[in-house]
Amino acid sequence: MKKKLFKESVEAFESSLFESKTDVVKDLLIDAKQKFKDWEIIQNTDPELSDAKNKEANTLYKEKKYPEALKLYEDAIKHNLKGAKAYCNKAVCLMALMQ
Image (cartoon, rainbow, N blue to C red; front, side, top):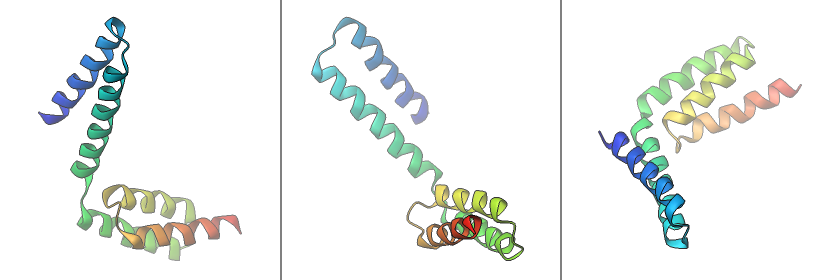
């Protein structure tokens, strides 16, 4: 429900730009888009899923399947933006891909 309201809010601000291109409307549109992004991040946060994907990626990394591991590390990061393990593991994996 909230996703629909955020989208409707952004669309309303975008439509109003056709009628009035004031700085106030532009600022409100930017603010609405940022709040929508923040809300989406919160909705996608799942530390347990992040840990599971990180562990699965670690297994692939040990098997030297670096591209597959990288994708899973990126998924882990998407589900927990504050999870340092996945960021560190992604960096190590990228270094392995460069060799």
